[in-house]
Length: 84
Image (cartoon, rainbow, N blue to C red; front, side):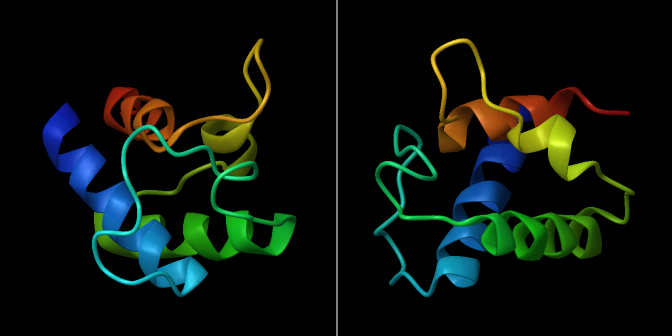
């Protein structure tokens, strides 16, 4: 999966999981601070991404907070693209 494909997928699935309208989620949005995601949303989103990619994914690997805390859509997409 290319980084561009991963970004499109994470953006689309995040909007769907959080009930946001198309176009309301952008690469710079932070999951918690900007989009109001909760722990159950991360589980749902992980399942959605697994279904879309056919891979087994780790919620903790994808969404584990970085050094500055809450991850952005782009950061999670990059992590997804880097996974085998």
